[in-house]
Length: 319
View 1 (cartoon, rainbow, N blue to C red):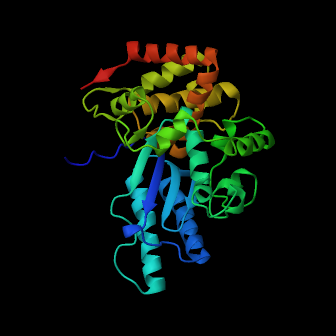
View 2: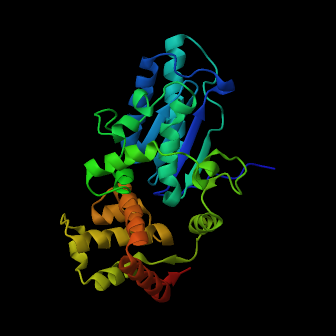
View 3: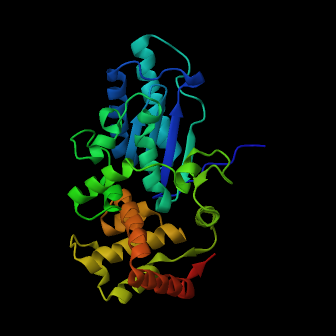
């Protein structure tokens, strides 16, 4: 049976594992890890994605990546091939450094993202390299604690899931990492018998993702009508959403538009970004943040449900 195709979801969170070919060592010394980090940082501007966590073990790498419009395959292949060429030159070697097919799983943010962050940061502890994650330099754990390491790692989204105040969020994060890992979510992270190993989430999550990413050629929503509808709902002028204003209604309107663009597929986030004067990665982030808020805010959830119903009922379709 052939391999299932990778799932590309703009704004999606992915757990990537890059392993050395035949489990060979990929980091011989600290300078090798430093080189990998430099290349990882350089790729952020090129592909407009975010790295929310990482851990560099001796013969494999863990990354938690949130993609923009560029497919994850381009991001990972660019990073892996650039690093492999660098190592081959340095050690005068040839051949494949990494396994041909890396492991990648699309993650349901709630409830799995926090468990995944903890799982990645505790890798050196499980491997008996260190007794505490704080003692391991080559992961993003200490970045989450506030140290000025690896500034290219995005921590705000995950810390925001703990608390609004950064100092409180860091303390709660630290406590969370030290909690026993015996939850159902952790066990699923360690299991290999998931229904579809391309995703980490329930059956409804997989069904939703496959529906979002199916080919919708021939029936797309005209997005101008969505913009008009959302602006009327929030009673804001369409011209104002492209301004630099950060007042709450305008910020929420932009987030709603990003969420609807992602859900309907009527317009790409990069195209929407051009219209709003924002980059696609920012739009991906605010769409996810809005979804997270809606899970805690009943009024917001009802508002989004009303807007989605109106979009479905008044959508202008074209062949």
